[in-house]
Amino acid sequence: MATAEKSLHTPDRKRISICVLDADATQGDTVAARLLQAGFSASHTNDPTETLQMVRRGICGVILAEVNLRNTTQQEFLDRVSSLDPGARVILVAPRYISEVAVEAINRGAWDYVAKPIDMPRLLRVLDEIAQEAEHRRQVYALEGQLIENFQFHGLLGESPAMRELYDGMRKAARHYVNLLISGPPGSGREFVARAIHQLSPGAQQRFAVCDCSGLSEVLLESQLFGHVRGAFPGANENRAGLFEYAEGGAIFLDEIGECSPAIQTKLLRLIQHREIQRIGSNEVRRVNMRLIAAGNLDLAEQVKEGKFRQELYQRLSVLHLEVPPLNKRLEDIPLLVRHFLKKYAEICKKSIKGITRRAQIALREYGWPGNVRELEGALSSAAVVTLKDFIDVQDLPEFLRGPAPVVAAATAEPERWRPAPLDDVRRAHIERVLQSCNGNRVRASQILGIGRTSLYRYLKRTGQTGAQGKAVVNSPAGVKPRVREPLGTHS
Image 1 (cartoon, rainbow, N blue to C red):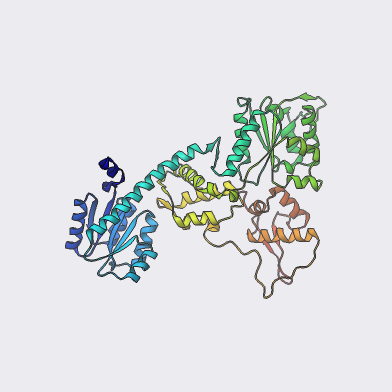
Image 2: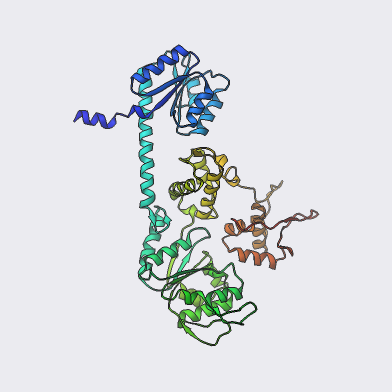
């Protein structure tokens, strides 16, 4: 029993590769030989550049380095090792032990600090600790791969209480062939939720149609949904069935339904009540039968109160109602998502990306993620493309993750005093500040504001903040020429 228990806790020394970096060839060879005799894989060199190359190639996990390095400073060496492999451990060797210097070295990134002549029993204990930690990391790495599979739910990934509650609601909703409303901010995965519910439903073998209601004009949206007959409008050269007919027996997902015009809302209400549609330009009434799944921002109920969305339609759609949590409300899911996206884009880019550094982890966790999971995926896909290392660091991340958040308003000598103002003025000032903080990027501003892009464009046009070419104008102080921002691409 004692032998078995000991084998469980004895680290595998052969898995640890040690580089002894010492200008004294005799002493370096002696230490390397004793480490080999103890069961470690060890070699000696007197060149810091050669050591760094070994770290880069992944054949050196521990460096036993003298304090006074040739052609480089101690801090530069530690930083270089950390950037090449955050998992590599550096043990500094000094002519004599000084506690203050040892603490400072460890604070700067060294794993330990020992003095000459080297106390081999103590060094072996330290190396065994590193071996145990490496074995633990390997186990965690393998378990994380299993966790991704265990916590994947039809395209969604998460283990937080908020996501588990959502999964339970999805399972219940899938059993009943009734209309469903999915609320959640853009980029949170509303379409994934809709697809998962369809896959779990009895009609999973039938068609699943998708329509983004915010990206089309009223005429095109009506044609897309209900179809049209030849000659119904300019360009209608043939009869065409709409998505409601296409999804017969299956399900249709209407994203950003809050962007629909009152006329489209009326037609949707009739569809739900009577299961009937009419193609544009036709008097023929057609019977349809499909499940309607709609999605919108969390302010859809507020739109009903403001009279912008029909209350009857909202009530009909929200027979079942699910809310997708934003990413900043489930931060504990970020490590799983990071691992999933890194694996995905490492394969796409054909790179060996093992993970991210602690500094990058902190940057990801401290960011607010207004664009939710979609924004996180975009940041990691960009980092996977630009990185030249096995571990993604802060400098590989997009610029908005490298530094502090942009200042929304310039500091003034005295704090601005509160004064009563109409609600429209407060809304306008807030939108202008968000646009300023996003450098005029209206796509990103709409994500932060939690409204659809079309709603923001309409508001800017209504308030005269867009030029003839769609340029967003940011108000400037009196006497200063307004700044005009060129239209940006559609990427978020």
